[in-house]
Length: 79
Image 1 (tube, rainbow, N blue to C red):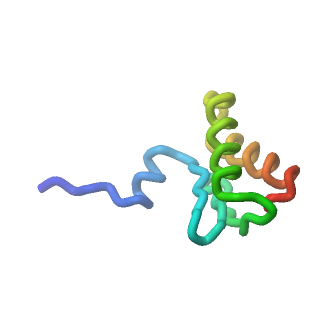
Image 2 (tube, helix red, strand yellow):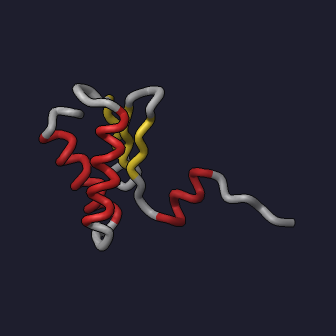
């Protein structure tokens, strides 16, 4: 019998992830275990920032990448 991996288990396999919710306007950092409300930005801006940072920093570890995105969002006043 095959067992599908649920979202929580997938996160454990792939490591840290930055989650951005369009409906709730929240960002979560799984490697840091933190969640914040987004403010002063659109979902698109937050998502684009995370994607741009990922493309430029793919060699960072999970916690380091989460910390980078968090820091950049804080600097912009988005969290």
